[in-house]
Length: 489
Image (tube, rainbow, N blue to C red; front, top):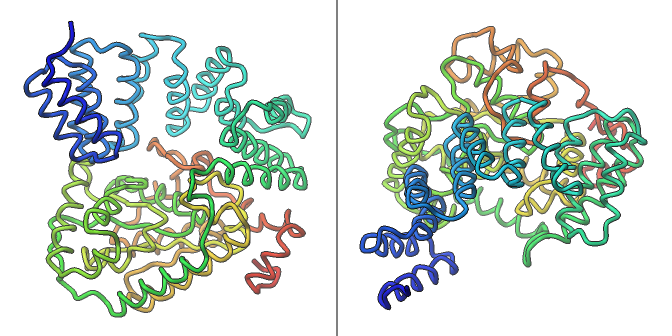
């Protein structure tokens, strides 16, 4: 039986909004449909999609449940989507695990659930279970690129001829693979070769990986604009030319601890140290601030508006924290791009404490080049672009430190791994926290870690990554010249 014409019209309108990316209008349209015709599981599914994109996570979970209750076809996809919200947005990994297990009970060979469950077990530090799920997926689809890449990262190869590395090498020869899949495989191949000391071959693999990644970028992405970045930093310095006035924003609750710094500069390590304190909850890379900035018309718009905007943003931010972490005392917000927003953060939270992680220049540039970052960080696809981004990053951080010399703690990754106790003592004191021995044993934490360095932060502190650039001294010569530094990094 055909749906009534007026239903068809309203569904078409909702779909039009959804396809155009007008998520607020699409959510309202689907609500209007369901108010009159509630027994439409696909509309509940689409409503949930829009609610998640609009940051309404609990409501999205409820709408997905409505889709299940009304017997949507393909319920395993609903459970998968619920799991993604639970782990990425609400930091509830155990609940996400239950959703994925349910999806696999409904459809045991459902590849996306196997892959996501493997990823989740990695985040939770459950290596064997992660490998098991990747293995199950590879038994179904032996050439699955991401499963091959992820599984290879959980083992240490015996040498360049290791079977796992050879499997990656063979997969890279497949002519049918798109550039994005080849990038995944090539980054994994480089990581494995680096781990077994085959540095020349590793660097060549990473060069290929970055070429594949650039080739896979959507139109308009994959290229770093040095001049645009310089202008952006100039404008931030010009707009925030003096310290924020004390008391501009009325913060209801303890502000989070903001952690920033270049990718691979030790920010995840610092967050895990702090999260080992009984008063601190790890927030990870929260999207709260970017959403608020976007709603205020971008960072320039937010900065140019009156103090009442900062007050409203602070209240909305804290409301978002309470919704995600209702039992938490203090939450960390660890987004590397927080360094761009420090002026705004200090307007929102005059008492905010900000931890800035720094690592030796050559090591941090190399580690960014070796990391498969989102195309939004296009600088990482080229070593000299990475060096330029680092220079601009440091220029802005120097400005913030001049404005707020006592409210930004510069923490050296290399000092932390060399002699952790005094650095951690300084970190805790800066954050207003009492000393806790558990912070020295952060690697025992059960907190889920969603980062490329998930396995490093689950180990005791080690110094192997300090001075890593020396293995690639020849390849880094152009970067050394660009940065104008000597061999000290």
